[in-house]
Image (tube, rainbow, N blue to C red; front, side):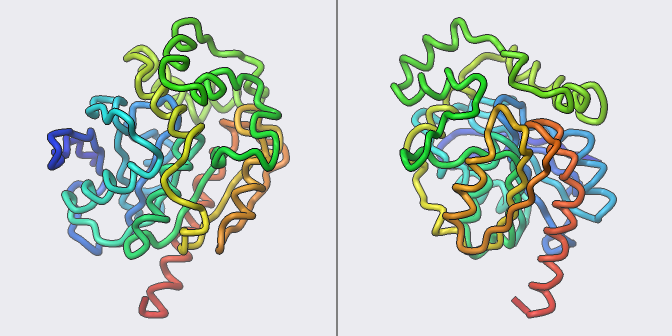
Length: 286
């Protein structure tokens, strides 16, 4: 049973939150916070709910500011997600937890791992974008980097770009379209819903990605699993390699035939990875 609620924050904002645990007590198995892609509403997706239920995982998802009923947070950066998730965890009675994020959710999951080291036990980042750098061509391999390029020039430029922005079908490979027609149809429908609600969340995300994140990957002390499709045309493999180099305890799984959406088929085994890590931690008495 998934419970939807608005968690009220001390600054007057609310965050639309979904809890598959149905108010389960603190410490009842592994809790995983899912960080959605850009754009999404934050509502839980059916494949994630099914995989979590099969593993006894309590899945918590939420809409980032300006997404899916959550209040805006002007000027937010990637690091802002950590404080929001901490407040949600407190409201739901969750102590320690793992984090997962896909695409635009990946950096926000890593923010939690970096800034909540006493609570985050492990992190999974699927097709996640790396911090902006000039050490390599950050845009190379992206079919449609216009939004991020505009975001690097500031909010006004990104808003102007949003007025004419259209999805480029060349961003997806055939495996991505097959995933959206099959197991991940709920993701496609949710992205459309988020898009119809307006561009503010996506604009804020892009600006956050293309500017300083507010933390360094070296601050992440928890184990991190990176999952990357070799044929991803939205976030190219160079981003996963760059993140791996910056993480103290990173592991990279490369899926040669996957693109940006089809790589999500790795979510169940990635959850297994988190469960195994939580088990090892419990046996050590951590």
